[in-house]
Image (cartoon, rainbow, N blue to C red):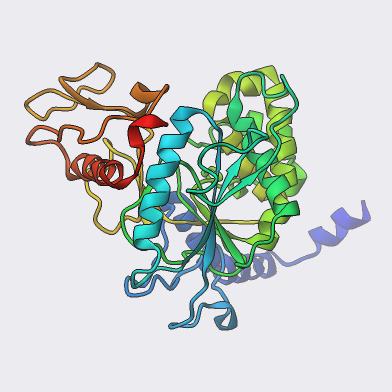
Length: 368
């Protein structure tokens, strides 16, 4: 009652002026926040990928990357000992070695984190760190749940020289030298169009309570590709693992998120630790939907590429010409795959040419 009487005695003009003051003081911050969240893009200097406009707030000058400084990152990808995983890892590692020492690269060491529990026949070809899989039955057939557990073990036990880590996947191909796109405590990540925290707020709130902040704090990303400080990943990884398991245990979440459940878990775990990512659309391209490789760094060949002989996409229907990694679950694709017909996008042509170059130069390709 006392509070209401006091408010009644305040001049309406004072309230108007006070409101205007708050409005002008916060206008720029809010519009920048909304813009960055809506577009998922930030202004980057094309010459060296220095961040010019940062998410939410302007980054202090002393946190910016010096123009000529090199901040190498360690490439880490989780893998199994299945033939399907092996041939992708071999191609990925081939192109890593080809791009690592070229101008503009800040690519450091490389580790295949093998979560099958025992060494395989690629140990001498690819630097590998063996970790344990989840206890039998815990992943319930969703093998991707092993990924956060693998990172937890690797980060605890391995000696990692670089301050930053790139979390990558076997079906990634480096198409040009990759610089360190992260900036201090702002990791860099690729925004996925199908990761939609806001549209799934009801489910997200089961794991990201309201007291932690708005759902927009959960970035539309997965764990890969992400370039992140090692010390940040050491904090996030155990939470990522626990959230993944909790999501899998929740029938509604498991049904709605499906095969991207672990991606949502990484995004939520990062938000729980107050970590926000720079959303880099040029980080990666995904054929057949992305048509050109210009300005991109990684090809992610997760989707099947099906075309008729006129060069027209027939997605969802097996094409007269096709390349789909899932056609090779039991062994590697043959050397010298046929090139796509005329009219197929440059991104798909580049993908096939890069696969062919790797398979032509890798020994014992057909005997895995």
